[in-house]
Image (cartoon, rainbow, N blue to C red):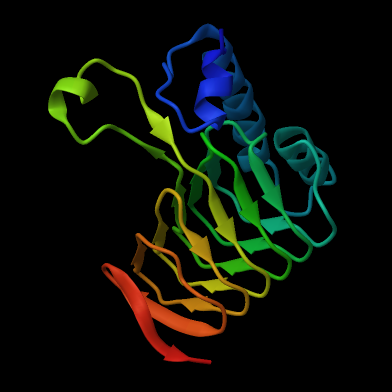
Length: 183
């Protein structure tokens, strides 16, 4: 029988209040709370991020405050920058390529709930992975929704709500986000 963690990462309905998942979220909260309270130049910042994510590459710069569910499902490449007040709900894997930058208040939502009310009120949740390619810029306030892939060298306009895949080498913006032009 699968654990709730295995169900969550496998894209199946899972119970978020499961003891293992609750413990993992509490651990992540303790780590990002400490991270958020440190001065910007504190030597403890990078080791805390490494503890939260499991490992990190060079050139990772995440401005506080930063929030996530688990941390262990976030994989970022080299030269990653995330501005103030960003949130990653990493109930599924969030893969972010090299040379990616995010403006303030960018949000990544892998978590979602059943659409049918009779199923939703039973409590189980779902999650679907997000993948961001290399050399991507995500403008402030953008929301990247469950299951989305953003292609290499693309730019997402500020305030966009990305509900479907975005190809390589485009500027996309809006709610819902759509391709505006090729780059």
